Image (cartoon, rainbow, N blue to C red):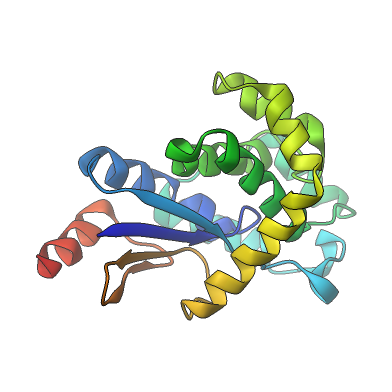
Amino acid sequence: MKLVYVFDAYCGWSHGFTATLREITTRHPDLPVEVVSGGLFTGGRRVPIREFGYVQGANAQIAEQTGAEFGEAYERLIADGSFVMDSEAAARGVAALRQVAPDRAAELATALQHAFYVDGRSLSEAATYRTVAQAAGLDADAVVAAFEAPEAQTAARADFRRAAQHGVSSFPTLLAIDDEHIVPLALGHATADEVDRRLANLN
């Protein structure tokens, strides 16, 4: 069995799931975790953040329920309102990090969310991936090259298709997958204990 974490780097609830994901991967080091990007802000939804009037209210709810941190630099992005969240660019970055360090995909996905939601960094800029890679002790040049390569766009779109094939339309979703079954373990907010109970029921 493996875990498949379907998230969007620009999804606040995915950011709120960070602590749970870290705890689950710590408790179950034997379970491989694959990370798949969803396409929350693509096409007509790639618009200035001010057009999503619910963001600040949602963030307050996320912080209250999960304890997730939203940094001052990110709050300045919200206040300015002109920033455009582009999930395809973020998915290219996830694919680049995953290519260079496949066994650390879950850790690096949460690092990307920290870069945006705490440090206020754009996930469309190569410099962000250089910073994340350096902090993680990875080959930053290799990560940036992978992010900028045409194959990254192909990988991003393949992720979107895979999320759809798994029936995932909201993020985050944590799935347990074996040869015969796909079982949702968490949709949106869930604690590590809740996920553990669901995992135990599968055995």
